[in-house]
Image (cartoon, rainbow, N blue to C red):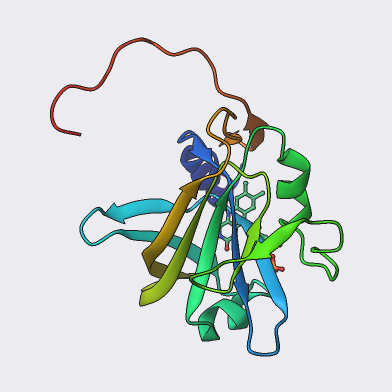
Length: 170
Ligand SMILES: Cc1cc2nc3c(=O)[nH]c(=O)nc-3n(C[C@H](O)[C@H](O)[C@H](O)COP(=O)(O)O)c2cc1C
């Protein structure tokens, strides 16, 4: 097994949620891709991040856009995640969305939650570019749904709660 494969396998030990990052370009074209690099950064001010592969076909659109949105997926949206994890035209053909009031970016309907962001900082992240966004608006769209999870190369669903809460101020 090559070392890059082993490295990816090691990173895959950390379970994540799954989201679709979206933006709209100056010519009104919609762009979106599946991500699991989404993370919160700061509460005050509210900042989040995701990292974008420099080889992604949507790279230029996100790079040039002033805003982006994060659409957090539910466990029923694995097919949608697949659809946005391939570079192809017509990703949006059968997707219901509305334009974000604060960012203009497409907000996908029936997701778990959405965050509309203004692009605040860009940082070099090797073969990725790290986007830090200031959250302009957020909404839990489906409060009773469960999130889609990603772990060791497979989609997963939420397991049982351990009924042990973290101590401290978190
Ligand atoms: C679960 C999952 C998580 C992913 N996370 C990221 C990510 O955080 N950043 C990224 O650039 N690509 C990520 N990808 C890969 C992109 O979704 C994929 O390269 C997509 O084809 C890019 O679309 P585009 O080329 O049309 O921009 C992920 C794919 C999957 C299935």
